[in-house]
Image (cartoon, rainbow, N blue to C red):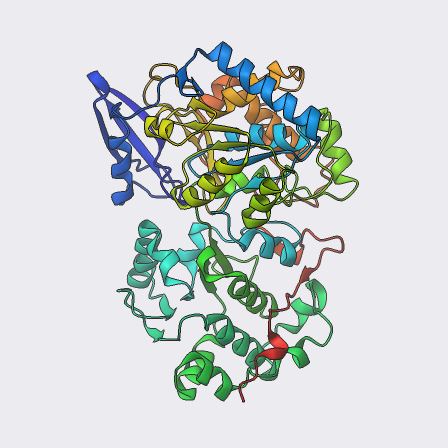
Length: 549
């Protein structure tokens, strides 16, 4: 029996597992007690790993127009057809769909090929949500400031989005442990979800942002602002208080939330004097909730300190890794943007042939571009059940559709070319957990048939298109080193994402990599990643229209 220390990969936690393998792909999974994300615990989500050992239903060979082909022919076909689309229709005529379940190395190569060489930023990642953009607007960089250990140190944990927390069972266990062992108080907003709390406000669905905005007004009017912190480290929008006031008095908030004014007051009073506050929210809560929660922490100086932080829960497994390499429409790699000099820096580092000039399209706007004939090809990578309807609509209108998948039933879905991907337990690379903890995913089983890693097929296509000098990867460690070098390239310390320490990592050291967290304690001392080092208090949509007659 062989034992492989790897990762679960079924949500954003990044939990460690010990995979025990036997003959005929026999597999038993247990939690890795040495991994800091889960300390040996596992939830039911890990059961999916043992199911992956079964080869029935696997796509094991490339298919071109429904006919089996070898890899050389498949790679040549993809390269030739993509080159023809690009030559005839120009940059921006190719789009990428990325699902979850990819490693950071996969996301990096996909992003580099699309933005740096195909000249397109059309990357559809519907699981990514709004949190990244909100954090970038507030802090100057998409950095989740909290760590799991902050839960253990908090005096109060405020859950503003119970559904997201329920999607991370081990995180909920950690919250409950803090309540039981440290006496941490738990406050929850929303309907009863089976989470026992010290204070629960059954606020009406869709009204959480309104309650938090009212709390902001209460903080301002009750002189609960950390005036020294705000004066030194936070920029407020013009007339923030005046624009916030309409509709956010105690009675209007109570009416909007469907609760009594006394309950709103009890909430304000309970939260006011607490020094160590962790506020947990997820993608499903929406951008306004995220903005309001971050504003509260900035106004009260409860950020950049142990046990005091807004705590954002991403959707999708390894969503943080995708955000590190900016595998989205509106950023470049290494938390870069499309403005100069960052764009020139990324182009120079990659040796890009035609770097995308502007953010791309996604969702319905990208479908419209496909229907109009501006986007002529789509490459879809990774599992994404929630995007089935979108992919069906896209396949119907693009002349060239390429799908990297491990499931043979997708051969019935009219893809032009199907490429056999590795299943999760056959992948090798890195994952970044929800609190910036980088861990190693190690291959548990050899690749069956002709299945290959996603980074491998992307690399081979890039080489076939004549870009071998920029896509020289032979193993995941090559990609990880380049990702590390790019985060450090011309980074004067403004960007917190800096993997400089691993830029020269050796292959053996990469193979034995133990979990580590980049960013230390983000924003310690009140220094943010903006041009002036100050955080930005965010306007909340509909502030001026919030009044109730």
